[in-house]
Length: 295
Ligand code: GDP
Ligand code: MG
Ligand code: K
Image (spheres, rainbow, N blue to C red):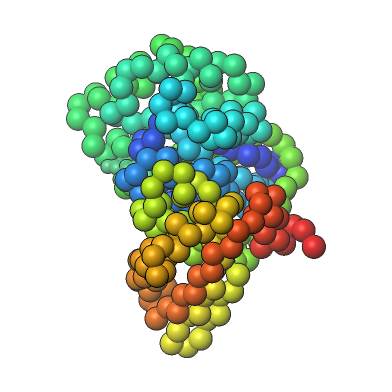
């Protein structure tokens, strides 16, 4: 048997809101690791899903999408998008049947990046006639992509093909993370994301973007799962808003999250949330700690 060299790298999933980036990442990683909601741009952070095998490790990041600078631009978000271009080893540029023909703007960014870019045409389950092929032809006119794949992230069509292309274009490199990194505590990761999703539904404007959720305890008994989570905000004023009058806003978030978690885990959930005010670096440290990277 041929021995393949170990490959590893960071794969950025980019594209406009609602083209299906989160759905695609989840289809590839096989777990619901990032927020999927019809509300655009809920992903502030680089959310990583890590997929490891004997001879590969793919580290996915799900970005907030390419946003026009004049449209609802949060400077930090744009910086984040750009930095994820620069950090990655491979870019999956996701588009769908419905993205308007104005690709030139995106291509300006993509032409400058030095890593391979794979075009992923998503939602082919909805394609009529040669719609998907026509769209692909349009994009290929604009840029010479390293590869093109047509998929339906929702219907799980073509996902294996994306995976093969990723492996093909990834650099030879040892694993970046221990191979059991996310299989270690996927439940906590999932709880974080679920609470974050409810925060996005509950609060307006910048509040969701200032929140970070860290599940601090997850104890599963035969009949009930007891979960504690900290919600970090940056300022006292935000803490007040998150908690709400007589705690009602936070209660709504907790109830909505609990209901979905009960469906997901198929068990009764006891969910406790605490709101904490911490500076940015503290939140990052808390995240890292949870994955065991700092002492
Ligand atoms: P993102 O904003 O790019 O992360 O997009 P999402 O993954 O949140 O998906 C946006 C919407 O498109 C959701 O309602 C998904 O269910 C839907 N969607 C994603 N992929 C597909 C697909 O392959 N086919 C269809 N029909 N819908 C999809
Ligand atoms: Mg998304
Ligand atoms: K997302």
